[in-house]
Image (cartoon, rainbow, N blue to C red; front, side, top):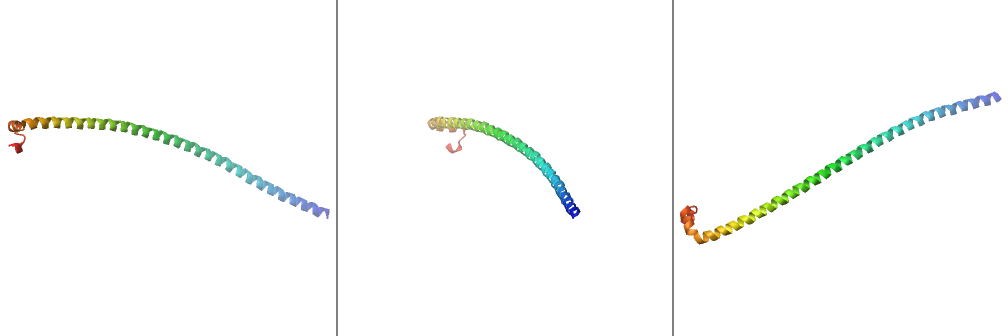
Length: 116
């Protein structure tokens, strides 16, 4: 009878040992997976940071380009406004001159057939 209890205890101990071995293997796999996930996460985070920095750099470059283009456009607009003003002044001066000398100008230069 004691031999039977002993055999049952040995059998139970062997089952516990098998379970422990199985759990140990599963735990080792989980630890390995955890380490791999940590490494992958770190790599992804590093890539994310790199992409953010590159994106910020590009955005900064675009802002500089926009600012330079805006300044150039403003300068060109000022030049065009000045040219418009000068043309208006010349037109006014010419119309005064032509108004005084319309007949003579038309006859001498024959540039305005409607005057003849």
